[in-house]
Image (cartoon, rainbow, N blue to C red):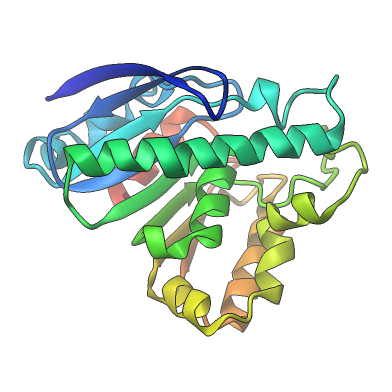
Length: 242
């Protein structure tokens, strides 16, 4: 199985960024880590091992990026607007540095946005905002409204709200999407959401599903037993939905 480590200086983020490539060809899977995960987390969770036949056959190639959540969404000492601004800079890094890197290495037209937990939010947010770049979204155990207070999960913007927060909150901006071209792209995307029946963000997933349905955007939502919020479940989900 082909495995490559890459690192370069990102002037958009003013720091070095690392990523891991697994596989040699096929649909390009852009993998975002969980809250505290790094670019090697997906491999550490042994998810590629469960997909090794598809990888070896050249059906899937994974691009596992690093996260900067400690500098953005989970940076409590920064002002909330600075948190979302840093998050937006990270999106620019993905769009203008990671995408060209992927396309230079692999001409396959299919790109899949994928992630688990906070990585699912990141994957869904970028895919819904830029649907022309993605053919599929596979989001496992995600939270699609970071302003919610649920159980011990707090509002990541400390009650602050702005246009920037709105534009990066899928359950807030999707209801207002009216552009025919964007809606067409969203309707063409293969969208798969999974959530545990006891996950505290099940209701948020159901809300997202209802918004997509009202917009005529076809999708799948699958409910798993218990919270289903761990590598054990994500390995099984990946075998079915990626």
